[in-house]
Length: 111
Length: 115
Image (cartoon, chains in turn orange, red):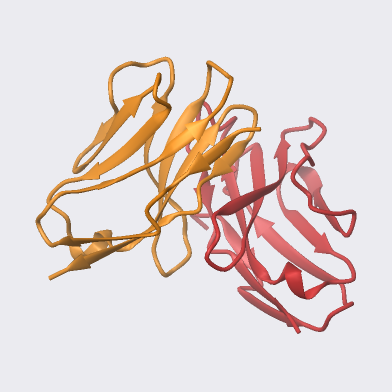
C-alpha cells in the first residue's frame, strides 16, 4: 500500500526566511503525481504545487519550489521569503490510482 | 458559485442517528471526491466519482457510509447509525477531469460532531 510520511509535525520560520518541509513516500508504481496542499484555518485545501513523477525538473510556483528525488522517494517543499500568510497546515499527497495524504505539518511564521 | 460548496458547515448529531452531507462541485467538473479529516490527522480518501463510471468506493470505512452523485453534479454522503468515531471534517473536492490532468478544488468542509 502507498504511504506518505511527513516527519515534522510542526515547523517555525521567521518572516522573510526560508523553510523546507519534508515528505517521503512509499510506492511500487512508476507513474504517479505528487502534491503539496495548504490548509489555512478556513479549512479550504489549496493546491500549492504539483509534480509529475516522470519529469525530472523540479516544479516551481513563485516562492514555492520542490526538491523531488524519485530514487529516494522524497518530495520536500521549500518556501522562500516566508510571509505571515504562509502560516497553515501543509499536506503532502501522492496520487497513482488514488490520493494518499500525509499527516500534515503545521507551519508557524514569526514576525 | 465559483467554488465547491458544502452544507451544512457544521453538524451536531446524536450517536445512532443518520446524517447527510451535501457537496456542490464546480459546474462542469466531472470528477468528485470525498475525504475525511479527523482531528490532527491527514486526509483519508473515502470515495471518487468520475463522470458516468462506477464510483471508486475503496476508501469507505464501513457499510454505514454511502454516497450518491445525482445527474453528474451534486453529491450526498450519507452516514447511517453514526458513531462517535465518525466525528471529523468531511471534505469534498472536484476537478474537471482526472486529477492527473486537472487541479483538484476543495470545498470548506462539513464539521461533524457525534455526541
